[in-house]
Amino acid sequence: MVELNLVSRFIVLATCLIATQSFASGASGFQLQEANIEPENIASLQRGARNFMNYCSGCHSAQYVRYKTIGKYLELSEEQLIDNLMFNAERTFETIKVAMPADSAARWFGKTPPDLSLRARAKGADYVFSFLKGFYLDPNSPTGVDNMVLSSTSMPHILWEMQGFQAANFTEHTADGVTSLEFEGFEQVTAGTMNAGEYDDFVRDTVNFLAYITEPIRSYRRKLGVWVMMFLVFFLIIASMLKRQIWKDVS
Image 1 (cartoon, rainbow, N blue to C red):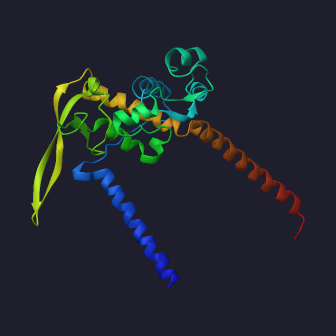
Image 2 (image 1 turned 120 degrees about the vertical axis):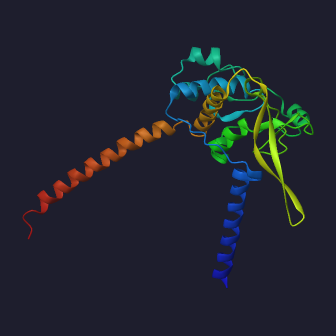
Image 3 (image 1 turned 180 degrees about the horizontal axis):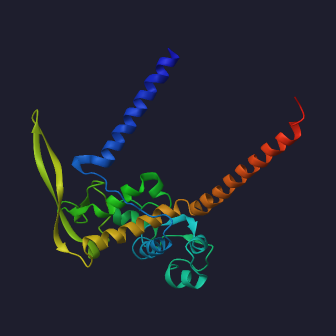
């Protein structure tokens, strides 16, 4: 009976996870787009840091990463950090804190904007990439826009000037008396300052940085891991040769 209950619980949990993933990646026919980020591209990460500080840090914090860490791994000097990224801090060892008071944010947006330190790890880079590209005009929304990835989001389309505004086209489907809407695609309504390719690159750099801050030492850890594995292989060879030398006269 105990084993049966465990199996039943596992099946229910797996079903919930599959349903959640299906909703996140294809609700109403919308599929997440691949971010294709480059974690080792320092130039992309530097641009992403610039984008985050200019467009995101006014509402979103990243309280688990320090400016000093960003400068170290993104090859930025202290002067570059202070002049280009540190808008809400005075010392490089401080973390990225939001300028907006939490109570004001909750009053304006209905809830406090989440910290983005671990958002790319929790949701995935593809999710964040698709979210930033998924805003569309909705006259029934308080902000004038909604999002295909996160329906009824309280976040306004802060990148509208670059992307422009787009409308979402839906097709009605009726089955068993139930009418549903299936997403067909976006239609550009007003042009932005960037074309589609330039906006994709802008968002990709931003997501690349968000993925980076979830684990700033990732690149260093991987490089160190290669050296550790090389050492272990070398040590294994030496140990094997030593064993043969010691036991060569033993029948």
